[in-house]
Image (cartoon, rainbow, N blue to C red):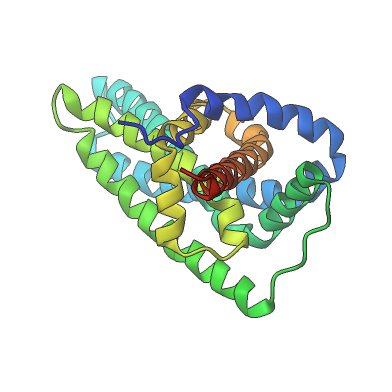
Length: 255
């Protein structure tokens, strides 16, 4: 059952069109994200080339080059390429957030300043490095969850359903946690926030999951999801503060 502070699934979905509107007002954010997008795309292309070349070589060695075997080899080569694309698509967003942590943090900061209407103080260097270290540890954990998801998907009937739901949650959380990383919140605090608003996090994760399997869609949509995750984090913090204020006012009222 959702907690009393849960923003809801639809709220998570709505952060994406809100992010599109906000990006149109912050062109510098798109320019800032050009370098990490290109870097991630180059690394992804290199990973595809190396993986496909190695696996295709093994396939050629295993199958003889004659008659129907040539057709089978061609079909298997095509399926192999599709499989690698899907595997890389799943990890694309996480690789992007990992390799471009500091740039993404700057984007998150610009969005927060736009939304709050004030210039936020820069975090101390020690706090910044601790935040980056926590984010790297978080990425390792999420990668482990991703591997677990692949095995869960092999379970007949319910496995694929559970795997999709888990993937949606992981992807939504990855973008939601960007602002939390810049503010150097602990992993436990990040997860507590996400768990209290799990439906909203999954709402954000749905378009991320879908975009990951659209050719070039994952590349073009990443800036939108970065902004959407930041908006969701700000909404959750604002709602938490409002509820604390209401409790404070309620406790101060005479009985």
